[in-house]
Length: 362
Image (tube, rainbow, N blue to C red; front, top):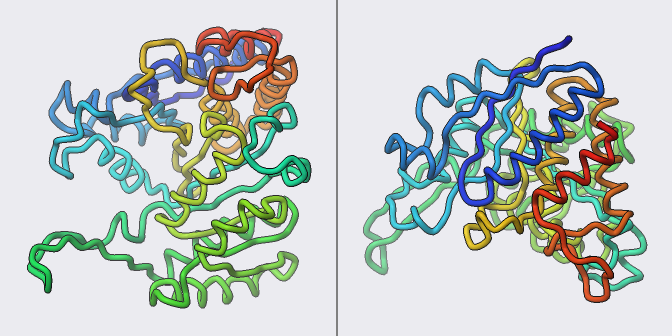
C-alpha cells in the first residue's frame, strides 16, 4: 500500500466544509486503489491568528515542507479585517507561497457542458466551449514588491512596487510553454508593455524563451484587451501566462464565465520534488460558513490536480474528474450553479460530496 502525506489546512469560513468533502473523496480513491492518504491538519489564516497570534505559524510551514502535497480550503473573513496588513489572514498565503517556493499558479477554467445554462455569455459563445488554463506568476510582482507609505504631492500616499527579474519570467514562461505543448499548442502572454517597464522586460524574456518551443504558437495581449476578449471569444484561448496581479484578476473573470467560481480548482507549484499546494479559487465566503451551502466541487477538482501533478496518480485523477462530470450530468446542483427551471432542489455541501463519492463507486 502506497502512503502519501498531505498537509491539510482547512482555514477559515467555508474552508473546513469543502476540505472535509474533498478528503472524503480522497479516502474513496484510497479505498478503490489501495492507497493510504494521511492528512496532517495544520493552522493558517484567521484560525491560526486566533490560536497563535500569527497567520502562519512556523510549525505549519515546516509540516507543509515535509509532506507530499498541501491541501488548503480558504483563509480570511470579516472577523480579521481590522488587523494591520502584516497580521491579516491573507499573509498566510503569501508566506506559504514564498516559504514553499511556489512560483507557478495553474488555474484551469472549463465550462462543463452540463453547466452551459450557468454561463452568463450568449448561448452561441458558450456553445463554442471554454477550456483555458491560466499560468499565474505567484511569488513576484506587486504583491511581493517594496511597499510602504510616504509623503507625496497630495499628502500621505501608499505605494506598492511592480518588479520582475529575468529569471522569474523565464521560469514561469517555461511552465506556460510546457503546458501549452501538451494541449493545443497555443500560448498567450498577457502584460501591459505599452505602459509598464516591468511588462516590457516580461515580454522580451517571453519572446526569447519562445525560441525553445517552435511548436507552440505565441501571441501577446495587453491585459485590458485580454479581459475583453475573454468575454468576446473565450474559446480562442488555450494557455495564458501572466503576472501575479493580472493573473489574479483574469482568472476570477474566467471563473464567472464558466458558471461559478465555486467550480474552479488551482495548483501552486515550484521546483520538481517540492510539495505543491492545491486550493479552490473561491474565498472563505463567511456569509455562508457553517450553513451547508458551499459548493465543494472546486476543492474536489483541486484534489484531482493534486493526484495528477504531485502524487503522480493520473488514473485516479481522471476518475475524480469523471465522477464530477457524471454528477453534474445527472442534474445535481449546489445553489451557486443552479439555474431557474432546474427540476431538482439544490444540494448542500455534504450531499454534493456524497454524490461524487458514490459516482466513484467506492
